[in-house]
Image 1 (cartoon, one colour):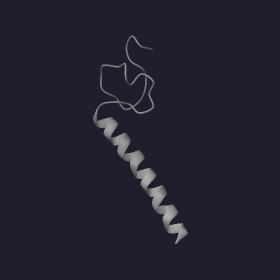
Image 2 (cartoon, helix red, strand yellow):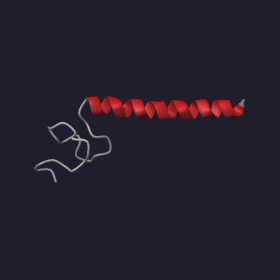
Image 3 (cartoon, one colour):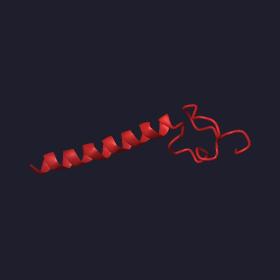
Image 4 (cartoon, rainbow, N blue to C red):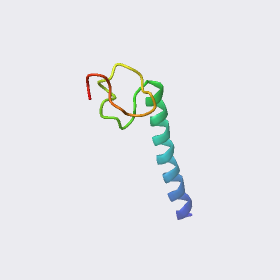
Length: 54
């Protein structure tokens, strides 16, 4: 029973993390990119910085 509870908690944590990343990508933000809040353009799939902010 304890193993089932631990697996459920881990699954909820992973699911929440995936949901957060998908939500941020839909808004055009790069999760983990230090320039994601200062860039005016949408995320291109990888963090290379943006023009003028490198």
